[in-house]
Amino acid sequence: MNNLDKIFNSVLAKIIPSEDEIKFINGIILKLKKLLGASAEKFKVKYTKIEAQGSTGIKQTQLKGDYDIDLFIGLDYGQYKPKYEGLSKNKLKKESKKNFLELCTNWIIKSLKTEEFFNPRLLYAEHPYVTVDFLTNNTKIKIDIVLFFDLDLDYIKANGPITAVDRSPWHGRFVRDELTIPQKNDVRLLKQFFKAAHCYGDKSALGKVGFIGYSAELLIYYLGDLSSLFRQFHELETKPLDYYNRSETELMEIIHFQNDHLIITDPIDKNRNVASAISRRAYKYCKHLVSKFLEKPSESFFEQTEIKEADLTEFKEKKIHHFYVAEFFNQDKDIHYTINRDKLYSLADSIKAMGEWEYSHNERFGSIQFELYFDDILNEYDLAFYVENPEISESFLRQGPPLTEKFHVRKFKEKNPNFIVKDDFLWVETRRDFKDFLGFLCDYINLNIPENFQIRNISDITAIKTKLAKQTLYILDNMVLPFI
Image (cartoon, rainbow, N blue to C red):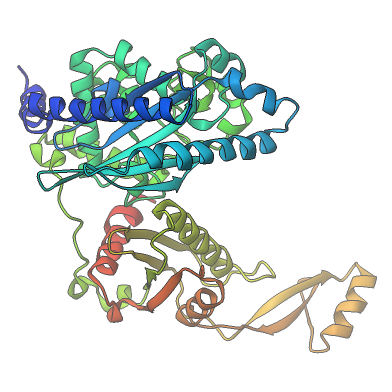
């Protein structure tokens, strides 16, 4: 047994769930099936199957202590198809959402008002679904109950899904049937590695989304085992993984693949890239860690620890003035954290775009990098920024038309009597709205902050208020900037 295998086996012994855990989860699933099945008869609801999906369901790729359950309820598409005939994709989406909403509200939530199943509530992703907590022995387990159209695999491959989750049961069956038990254990190790790197799922510390469970499962499927994957991890950017054995040229002909930096195609849907949402930052940081692990293997790469707080005493005077933070509190707990995450990423993208260039396309504050980190339990969301030129001149020379364009020259001169001629163009000195980044940042955020957020602090890093902000700064300085 080589050194890598010894480390993998040692880590696996700590993260693989016990038989008691699996029996416990299966017992909850059985209770749910009976409860929903009985109430379906009462409410005259027709369904095709109730099946536990995800890592704790038919995949069996969960980690120790992962009790969350994804229960999927299949609906016969033939029953709904007549209602949808002739509808555009958008209208079909709205109509199906309406149907799912009715079933969630009038069947599933009403069925779950028991002593064990606590606080059933409606949430939204692609379409409505129900989340409920199972309470026993001071343990709270989150259960998501999702409706889907139970489509044949041939139908999905030929036409695509009706809703985004219609593929999910087939994902589960693919992993169940195509991965061996050793491969499923390698998936567990890979998930643990991504979690230890803080690059897993939709709460990834780097970028909007890190590696998701299905992407980890497919990476092991395509490359065979964890050792092989790690040895080839640095090549993923340049070597697409395709179930259908298409060339890179063929894959690049698919329009929505063209801007994707990683390609891991979905065996269930040949036109879907499972890696499309994985952040480039998460990949680059994980690539760095994989390289370090192979260089000097250690179990420490699989140990989940809290993200460090930036030590401000280590920031030199020159460096400290390039970093800024914006600290927010979410005032509406009903808004899902992914929606809040996306709102703040959009805000930060706008700050970057507006901060780097003037409206006239003259350079403004230079290169701007940012990262978002949040704690949805505390409802705290923080942005950290690195700015190349935090202090700039009060004015700049804005370029006008070339001297050869007589009409535009005349108009420019009328509007700008203080013009100058330089290099065969007209120019005018233009006063900036802001000469320091902090003033620009405060103004822009105050004008554009989503209404459910309260601004707690916008400052340079000497005035950071919270632990989370220091962690956000650490992420930007140590996990993002070195790999851009």
